[in-house]
Image (cartoon, rainbow, N blue to C red; front, side):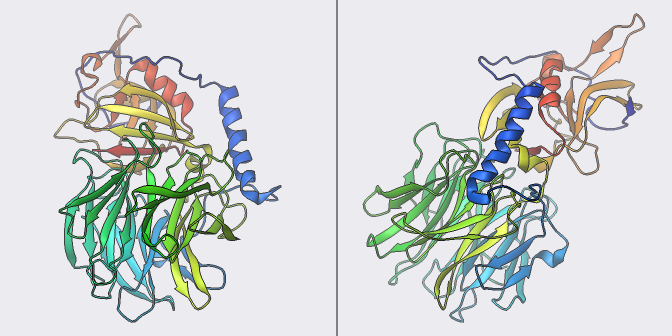
Length: 488
């Protein structure tokens, strides 16, 4: 028994259990099978027989492959992964490298010269309110010859795109997709060409159909919408964009979202059709694929759980080269950008995560506060959906990306004399967690549960509650370190 003097202590509600047909069991045998499958997936990237245990934890650094510089990011203090872009944002004729912090790192963006000097740093969103992590892109959108820095939020924030100058001054901002969507937005820039303004390309994240949209540079006009993987496809889509000499038109590159086959598609903006498509890695490796584009070269990086095999293709899908970005046993996922060097287009890479437990097992919990629902994902697929009760208006549940930090079968609150089964803390201070409906012990040995009638309504003190049965199944299913994405 562990005493907890904080967390979810709402005093009203009733029991609710949302059953799902044909759901998999979450016993020991299944968990062992999924763990073995994860190790097999790493091998499918060409790692072969691993001499070291696979890890998703490593230093947060940027590399230019294969003989370019290596740079330590964020002063060496933040190790939660990053996203990356490359463009000339100073007007000196050479690329700079733009990186943005991953979840829990604050919405920090940094800009580095090719020599490794930090030449810019700013917060893309409100520092104290935004913990979701930032996706970044860069390119010239207004034809002045200087690249702009474009950011979109990772899951847990409103879908607001912002465009910045190097000095951190904001040029414009606008929202994409529906305002209630908080599953994250992947971003790319269609650079200006021959005096024509550039465009902003966005790909949806978790919680809705995978969709690509292209907006005018000021965000006022929706120019194009495309569902690259068909209706019903979810888990997001990664995007890149630019002019293609091969196809003689601007193209958008789509990479499949987390948990899906590593499918890459090249879409012609003028012809409005798919011009090429292929599997960047083995078809059975269902980890998604990150993409970057420059001068008819498409760079791919694996999603979380795959080996660090970064590949370069032509726009028709012909493999040009393959390089290991990091140690062969690193399986945390690789974000990619494309830069110009004297010998052509080269990959720029950063690790996406350093969470050793969560990334390796392929499980994820996504919570929507607006819908009062919780989704359980495994290998990118939804395996269960259930109602929850989150924090009331005066004590809201924080949004952002977290992880399960402990597992306590029965936690106890001294302040209210309440017991909470299946407790899993998610915030670093341990004050907010996931658990079952709390209960009092009765004199006759029975239990009086509270909150049963309010599942589906935010009435808690900040924690996320489920029915007793749902909380127990989640507790058994999710190991310590499982990602928890809380969306508005």
